[in-house]
Image 1 (cartoon, rainbow, N blue to C red):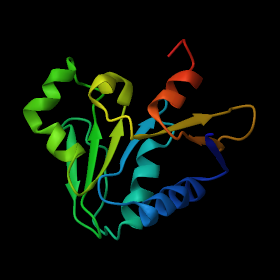
Image 2 (image 1 turned 120 degrees about the vertical axis):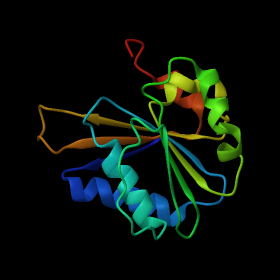
Image 3 (image 1 turned 90 degrees about the horizontal axis):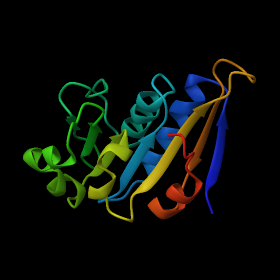
Image 4 (image 1 turned 180 degrees about the vertical axis):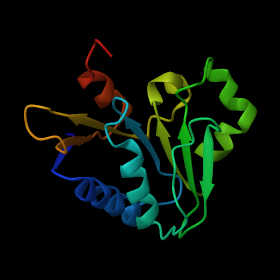
Length: 154
């Protein structure tokens, strides 16, 4: 069963990520899904803080992956600009996925066929009827649960 967290501010979204980082274990893979500007990078910054990373965390839009050192290594991927999932092999994607660090992958549906079934999908949604900073963060137990509940228009 998925887990839903509602946040009302950027600080609360960050805190949700921080808790994930504090609980992260070697080999964890988190899939960050949601529209542009929904808060994926804010959540990623929280995960980094939870891992004890103090350097600034930014979205790796043009470099595909940023690496950070903390309690566990953090590998933050943004695969938005990947044209073909096979391009991921050129950067050693499976070594990151099956290594001792934590992977955060933004835009995971682009490389879905490369992802382990054990990855944890996290979907962030806005609801403009509520408040501007409102976020609904849904944490799924598996990729298959995510696929079953995914909006078919995405």
